[in-house]
Amino acid sequence: MSCDIRIATQSDIPALVDISRHMQDHHGATYFKRALAQRTVFIATTGPHNAGYVHLNFSPAYAYFRQAGIPEIQDLCVVPDHRKQGIGTALVHACMQHAKEKGHMTIGISVALPASFGAAQRLYTGMGFMPDGFGATYDDIPLKKGDIRPVDDLLTLKMIHNL
Image (cartoon, rainbow, N blue to C red; front, side):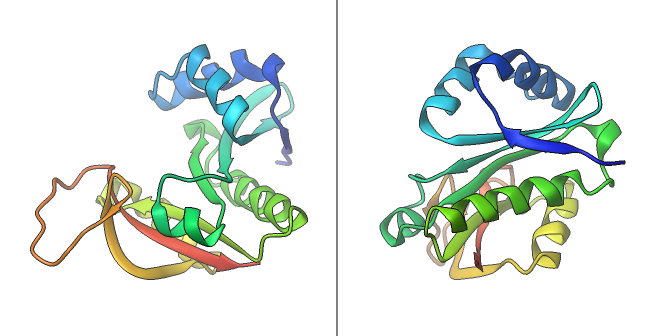
């Protein structure tokens, strides 16, 4: 099944909210208005269906990415009924192409460490993303040896890919 991917606009906010609802994230219109003002958001559709979205943040909170000028792919979401059709890969590729067009040589992404994020872990490594070498982070703050944090979706590994 083919999908169309394009940069989202304000008129896409209802579709983005709909995708979020399917993901059980429950982000509302205010979240997406803010996201569209601060980031580049891509939306994927398959025919009349809203299939997924992703954010490309050119000013990420993670200090290493921000200081090195590395844009970060964030909040990749593919509606469950549309998974395993290449939509996630296509959304990541759209971000990579956009960052390259903007003159960036490297792009970043983070992946949570719980097993429920195993598909994303395999997707990103399969696409050639490698750990950035600074270890795990919790809420975008690098962890030091001996730190203890809950194993939730804020415990992540930051990864990079040369464009």
